[in-house]
Image 1: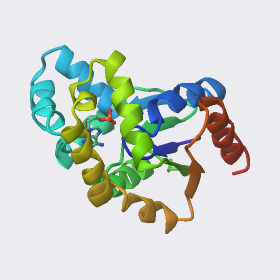
Image 2: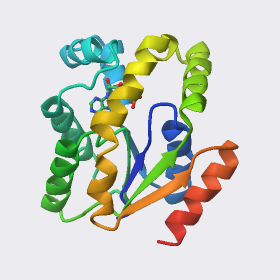
Image 3: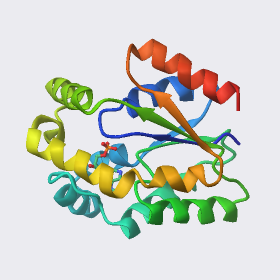
Image 4: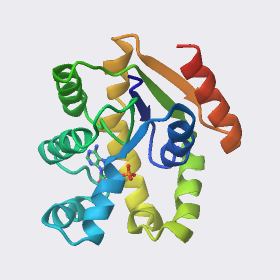
Length: 190
Ligand code: AMP
C-alpha cells in the first residue's frame, strides 16, 4: 500500500493537492476536517462536539479524532492506499496511527510536508473563505489561533516521521500545478 501523510499548516493546500494525488495514485482521501464538517452538516452528536472546538480554531480531542479515523479506515476493503489529510495533528495521533496501521499489517510510507510562508497562508485562507463558507477561514483571530495551534501541537509531528526517515519537505509556494509536480516527483523517487 502507498500510505501518505499530507502535512502542513492550515491553508497550505492539503485538500487541493490531495485531490490530484488520489487521482494519479488511486488512493483513498481521508480528511478528518471534511469528516467533521459532514457531521456538522448532518447535525450528529459528533458534529456538535467537533463544532465547539473548530469554531475556536482548537483541535478536537485526540480520543474522538483517533476513533473516528480508525472507523473510517476500516470502511475500505483492499484499498491501494490512503492519503491522510489533516491527520495526525499531534504526536499522540501519530503514535495511534502507527499502532493501528501495524495491526492491519501496513504502515505509513511517507510524510509530505508543505512549506508555505505565514503571510501567504493567511491570504489563502481569507480568499478561501469567500467560497468555502467556513467560519474558521473568515475570521483573522481564528486563523491566528489555528496557526498558533499548528506551531505548538502539530509541527512536532514532523520529527516523529523524520525519526523514521519518512519526512519529505516540499516547497508549497507557487502555482498549484508546480506544487503537484513536486509532490509527484517526491512520491515517484521514494
Ligand atoms: P481542516 O479541515 O484540516 O483545516 O480542519 C478544520 C478543523 O477541524 C481544525 O481546525 C480542527 O478543529 C479540526 N480537526 C481536523 N482534523 C483534526 C485532527 N486530526 N485533530 C484534531 N482536530 C482536527
